Image 1: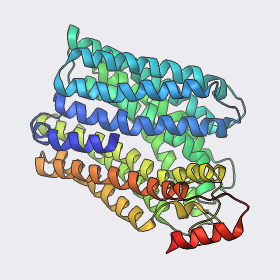
Image 2: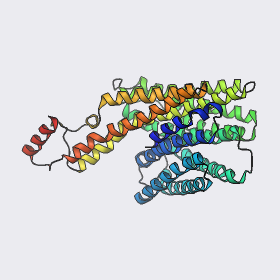
Image 3: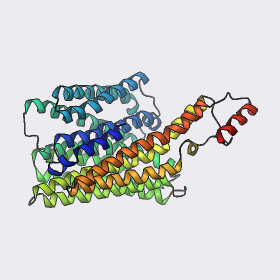
Image 4: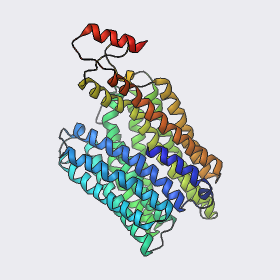
Length: 419
């Protein structure tokens, strides 16, 4: 739902983005992507994987539901308030976001206190801190819209985006990937896996220097942050290369999603470099390139979120179906994860989300509204296909389930379903 709304918002904001990438419509579209899509997905992943990585449960499932509800309200009220310029709506969304952050920290802190669990836990601790820092920055941003305490110019917004993109969303992926890649690729990387450790330490350190450097306009501090952040993200790419090199699973669509995601990270770095070179003598062109860089970095996370959803959601649905007595596919064979979605539609999803990211980046960089709107439209298509593809088959199986222990009735039912 968040991705569909984000795509629709980009269609609506396409003309405004061509003239001013920091306009309220553009900010609303970006927040639907960062909050309602990426952050919602990452929050779900943290509740799923933190107990797996740490070996400790969250404090309370009820707190998890409360976190979901408060973040859902924040993720939609904030962009709606930006788009309509209703400050009361923005403030309500900011208040709900603060509640969600408080609940998340309370719920996950006990799990993340586990010691001796390696770089994934270290990275998740830093990511939780990045989430808090992003929220605190956002609270000031929300308050300033009514108070006008300081000049909320492009470099200030970029300082805020840097924390959210890399110290919160990106670092969460970097940390969790060190646990997921060995499982999904069937990869055993020999040695101490140094690139993964460097990634989870260098990435937050780089952001800790880059964001203040952008905020107060101190180029040496910002450049130092960029250098350290590049080391962290480069180490993440080296870790990906090592896992793909030592994988024992044949190349598949999931690998294509992950590799394409890494290419968007490289593309974002190239666009950011181009923006820093150009902005000195052509401010508008530099601003559009910077906006395209943020879109590419968001594409890095969106591509991998959609790709991993095709692994993780069937796993969750499989467990749920088994608990309801469904353990066979329509052909009467043991139920597998791949039975729970259509792989042909997954290929269409890959094409749609990749083309959508490319179109959005191109539209923002070249200030071309048609390309920006096309990217938004492809995001709408992606969201609808993913929702249908990952839910239709499990729901149909659940609605046609039969009690276990009656092989004749069960076989007849699945043969009918197969026909």
